[in-house]
Length: 112
Image 1 (cartoon, helix red, strand yellow):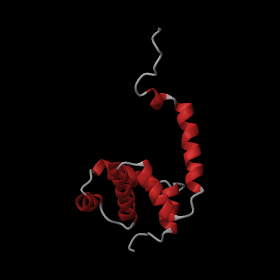
Image 2: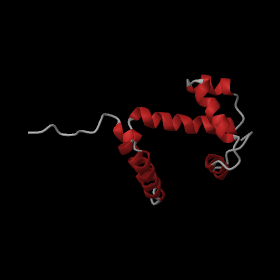
Image 3: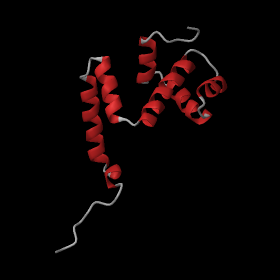
Image 4: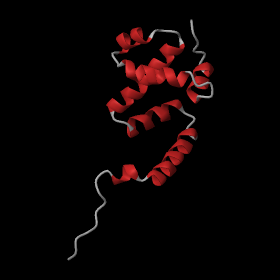
């Protein structure tokens, strides 16, 4: 019996072509879901509680930034690092960012 060639641990993370294709496929599937409850269930199935909390906190911090809150106030309110908030702030400065369009669509603006 020969030794089986097992993929090295973490090898799937490095397969950028396969990961890019899977990312596109997942995006297309998510876009096809037009039921918020079904999308929430999908999130529960795909993400751990910690991963989902990170995602939700990121959304909350982006909303708070867009509403004009300072980074320090956001850090205190959400209990997250300034680094995470700074990243969100940089994204909001990109006029073509999808998140900027989504926040505008949700009616989230400074002073609201």
